[in-house]
Amino acid sequence: MARKCQLTGKKANNAYAISHSHRRTKKLQEVNLQWKRVWWEEGKRWVRLRLSTKAIKTLEKKSLGQFAKEAGINLNQF
Image (cartoon, rainbow, N blue to C red; front, side):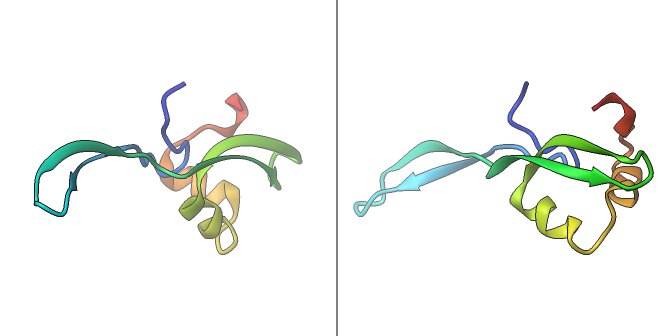
């Protein structure tokens, strides 16, 4: 599985590591992903998703069903 948030679609970002002498080397900024069990109210069951920490914070405000609908994800697959 790719390192990608299943709800927001966040993935790694290409960037430069800049030294004190201003030499640039390429680096990869990975997303902070966590495996999270979330209660899905409409399906009456737990769903295990790989989410970014930003998505976990957003889930505290929105319901999982609403968030997945906006992302275009079918939760029955998980």
